Length: 297
Image (cartoon, rainbow, N blue to C red):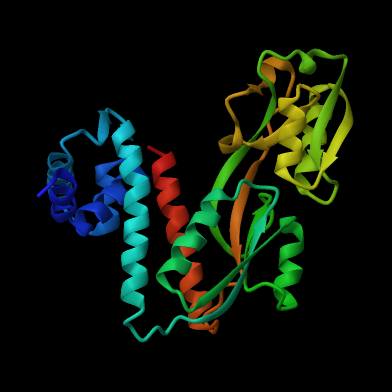
């Protein structure tokens, strides 16, 4: 028996599932809560997995755990393995969750997390027809009322109180790192279009601080705002989690007033909804709950 055969026979799918949850949450305590297992049981499974592979998978830190290079490789492989196992199991089960589900993903918020949640859910339920629709979230409530969407993620301001809360995050001012664009007498701005409430919030904050400005770039997507910022052409407003290595955050010290919090709401969920929509809504809530736990560590 060669080394590859030995490893493949000793790898345990339950260990891999546990490893993925720990890797996603970055914390054994949160993983134990999510899996309804004891912390010691999870630690033993990770230790067994590291023993089989003969290499550390995590770097243990005071505030959590991060993946080693080997751990990053195993994370990708494990996710593919688990998805394939789930797909295989689903082929032999009478699948009650089926039919089309149309989900709106906002362009005014980074949506990689939601895309991953939907992809994982669709893999576990192959008879489900998931379609993702991008656009300004301001249009999603109307689209749900018209039946054009079943579920949607809506970027709400602090006044709006409908749907179920997924997460909340501060917006920040950003410019290109080491750029002096924010020092101009009249600051050029890169903002979302007028129909997004972020636009007016940004202008209100600048006016309160006495800054002179001009809207140099107006975009309907986060990518457009980020491109203008990274090119050093303007100061932009984005979510804190969307800040990239080539950016710097601007604060009151530079004359940029504090921005409000943006809240992500899940719209379209209702008790009378078909099982596919109810299950999808539950998966989205759980996915965001895990993300919130990880980022709060």
